[in-house]
Length: 252
Image (cartoon, rainbow, N blue to C red):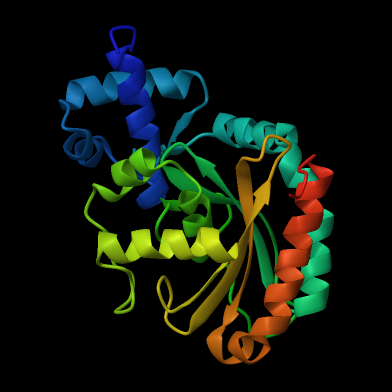
């Protein structure tokens, strides 16, 4: 940690604030969120603006994210082989289930949907791509966390659990029991934990080393998914099995 530059860390913290905030923010609000002086925040903004990471609205003097971040994000996705690799599998899964199919990966302590194919139904559930969320919060994310070490699970679950619906997990013990069940059966099915009236069916993708690199989830309205639960589950399991094999995983 001695090699960490505080100015760079604060710049990163500033940029991340926009992930869960309004499109534009002012110096005062950023100062409060970062717990830094307005002068320090202004210097950070000026530096980031000079490199295209931040833009200022000349009319109201508020700040927003710059186009350089969009370029970098596009580059990350272009270089992220599993995204391109997953697209035909997700498309096929949607054609067979008619529901939303997503690819979920872990990034540090968060989960992110990095690819998706929308449902074919006119009335459908959808998700926001590239948004971070806790590893315990969705069906696809819990599948990822279930295959992590117990110490990492403990680290993630040490923070207060965020509730999204009345059915969200509130007990660490319950989540850990769920992890055990996920690994025993090789998939997760849950309803109403992140969004009321929504059910997700997810399973892990293994790489050539036997590590879980991502998960695939089929998500849709509960009243439409649960009656076809077995069919959708089998399609999901077949999909991740084929993906895993193509990534070099050898089934035992």
